[in-house]
Image (tube, rainbow, N blue to C red; front, side):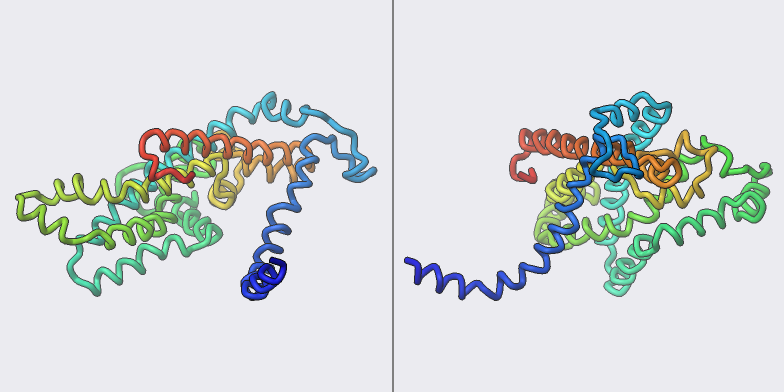
Length: 306
């Protein structure tokens, strides 16, 4: 028996060796930092060190909910992510179906490259592009578009009311290429005989989309939505911090949990409260993914993650 186990170990030894780098990375990157969660329950005092800092219990979490920023950051984080999930997936599906309808192969391949360009641009570059459009003095919108419409220029970085629309549009512009490719890869895998049979039966384009494309896209849609729901308490830091240029006048519509954690850590030097906010993000994300997966299990068990 021992000899059999020894031979089996030797047989799979190359696979175990290949596993080592990934396992080491996983431990260092994902598990060791979990020890830092203890800071969420401490009143960090740098003079005595992290380990000797006094325990604060749940005071750091109480502060998150009692501060004036609590409602704003949770509201913005959840509502923006809901908009991103709904509009992002909807736009991705529309573009994927439009690409599949193209008959020219060159144009189809060219389109795949084009829709990836916004995703490949970093949020740092995007922040400059947005500023080029919205700058109060030299922006394209104030200097070109608004004068053509007979309207006066707007100081965009001082007016919080415009930014929910701006941030949603910028996010969709960055991500629609990535989402479209994921859906497009599913659409091109659909057996074309389904569409041929539908045409014979007299089905039009919309009928084919409604009764063939969308039902066969359902597993992909559910998977991507579930993954997005798991991150509903997280936001793109660059989008909400760099694109609005960290303008304090815009905090009502740009403050999210991630930007709050960053400002709490670097601007207010409050490590305990920042860690508590990050810990809360993880817990809420876990709860959301469990609830969403349970709902999917009830509706379509085969499409659930687990």
